[in-house]
Image (cartoon, rainbow, N blue to C red; front, side, top):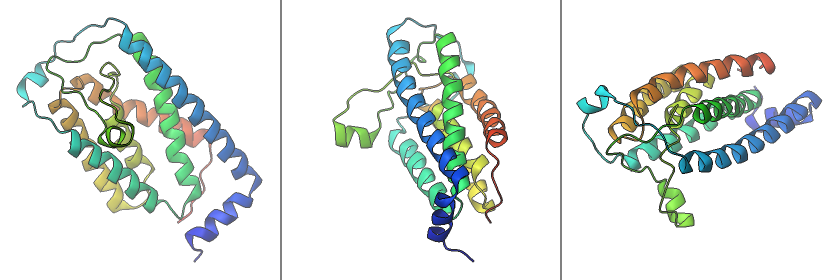
Length: 211
């Protein structure tokens, strides 16, 4: 059986993979830069605060560290799990890119204010390295953190990882509600947009079986 390094060397010698890698990197970079600019625009405009009876039933707790530990540990586990599958690593980034494009569009057309009592979710790593003291609060519909975990669930190949990421998705959805950084609809909508992104990505990029 080929080692992860051998599989990557084989993939990187393939012209079609090289082209796909380049296109994915370009699309991801452009999308990330554009989304960052959009978030600044969204933060500056007035929005509407929704009535969310589900939030009223939940406790309000600062879960910043558990949320980011779940995100970063899950991403690390996903990359380790897919280390022998170059095309599946690309698929993760492709689905993320398409999902982010969806988020950009729906955020632009749904001006919302953050829920009452929101506890600002500042990335501890960004705070440590870049002394960041603030974070966006109006990048609401739909939840990016929930989306990330569901992307990992859909693109994981190993059953145990898939089960873990599914539990992680549910946990993340609950955590961002308890943190009051999202409305219930933001969390419930996220998997549908991610699944649509996954379908689009798999149709645009034929992913071979690398097990």
